[in-house]
Length: 105
Image 1: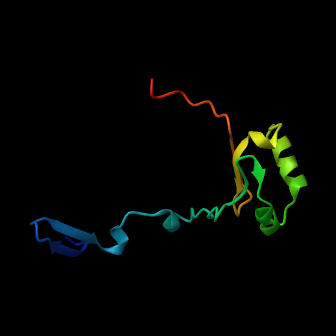
Image 2: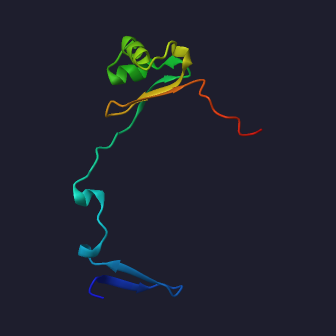
Image 3: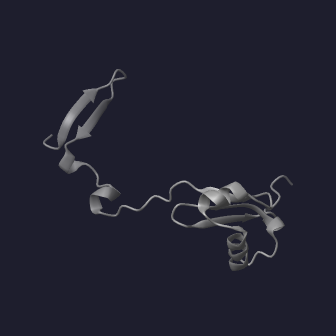
């Protein structure tokens, strides 16, 4: 009982218990393991087409896009279905012809 802050009998007859702060389970923030958020992502290619307004927002140009494609061994812009970069600089690229097993057979 010395670990209980509050106990409430619910209308269905069950009991909800709130532990005192020293007895609550530790969270990541409590053990100094806070990870930075990736933030909002900005798409820069959709359906094989460069989004020039997005590049302008990102402060990037078409040469940067070409370098990204070369780095990821993608030969043609048309092969990219979607590409984005988040606030941490992590790039995600989804190529058009992913191999997905046919689940409807």
